[in-house]
Length: 147
Ligand code: DHK
Image (tube, rainbow, N blue to C red):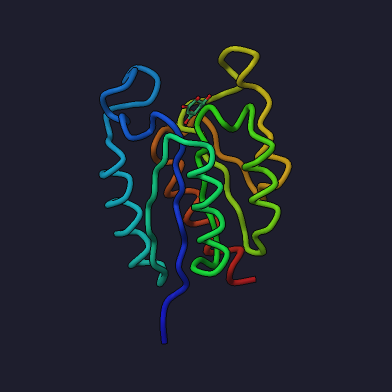
């Protein structure tokens, strides 16, 4: 029997994780995040696949793919969190759990980062826990899938 698949979607500039403003986003790369989540997924009895796009439409299409391919979504939409009704609309077409992750504490930063459209759909939001936030989100979606 195949294991539940969880897609971890990442928005603009997160391809530069580890090299981009490390004082805010830390030193781990997106590959490190993918590896850490895959290792935790094995322990939890699920599978993960990690994707990244610098384009709003690319993220919308990743969500459309997840509709058929994933049981849950973990998403860090980057700056599109604060602007994108299109990403919110796409997430509203997805039936499973959605966890929103921000590496930094967006509420401690500029006021334009305080609002997230994605939070209107997210079943949970993790902010300010660094890249560990992806693993916390993974534990939460696995718990939600079990209920
Ligand atoms: C990542 C970004 O790229 C920013 O645009 C968001 C988010 C915050 C993060 O903390 O992971 O404002």
